[in-house]
Length: 419
Image: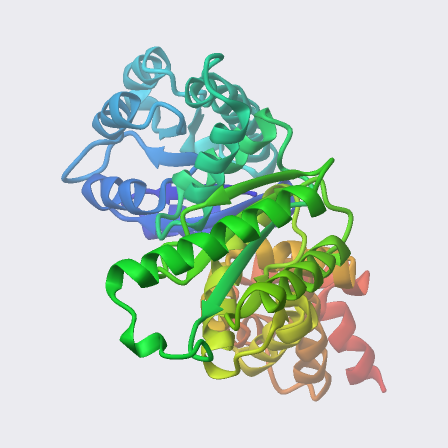
């Protein structure tokens, strides 16, 4: 899903840009809005959008200055410029600075905006290929490259770092059937462990970690498997796997490894796995890993699988409850995702897979259903219902209502006034 930043000093233009398109239908999400160029640059730096749609003339930092700055610092970001007739010479200059298109505000409509967004998406794909390959040099060992990209996914860094890591894994053919596996070793049952020196404990963990990696190479033979920095203490190890069809090989790995540990020492072992993810789902890998760590801290167990302990359906149910609880507010996918603790892309993919519809389609359908109950008693005007449900204007609300009910709100309301 492509992240889009909107920037314009006129609130009515910003509002129109947000409501004019069904962004999710275009595989996009509005990741932020800015009222001046300086605020827009701050959002570019913190959220790393794929596409920026901005006014050429803005206070504090003009759109042209923003474009020039980003062309040097973030050349992968694609710009679409908004302009008035008097700014036309500046619009031409923006094209020389690699803006993909410009739009005249006075002529702005849904069709023109969608066309420009389509051009921006195509250009973003080209730039992704252009700026990504440097991270995978021909003289780099493919396994090391996979490990580096997977480690980036599991690091606290978010935004473009994650996007770049996924693109790198795609280039290496390692983006399908992926899972992170965490090994947690507990030496508490080993006799006299408290008397071990630091050096002795280090050798103990190193021996068991090497045993785990040797077992992994045997169990996952024919699949992709690389060790990763665990980042969680001396008694841990981490693996990144790809080419999995399901998590059964991971369960087999846990069984064989636990048996090997029992034969050699009294070291306790737990295997934590994120479950199998592919493509853009990998953006949720770090969050799943963190949730696994928290779950394990509360309830340690020998084998802990994310899909078994948390369950994908819980997030969809939580999101639906959020929509129902905030039905009289403007509901955005990024707000809901933040409220339930997952990424907007991952929430959107869950809705598409489980309910067969985009998240915003679900929101609009729910709002329209509630709107019907508000319109039936005939005491409220259409614009009042539109405002109550968090829509920017009655015109857009009418378009949404008609899409689901095959009639306008006025036509729907008249049916009840006749009765």
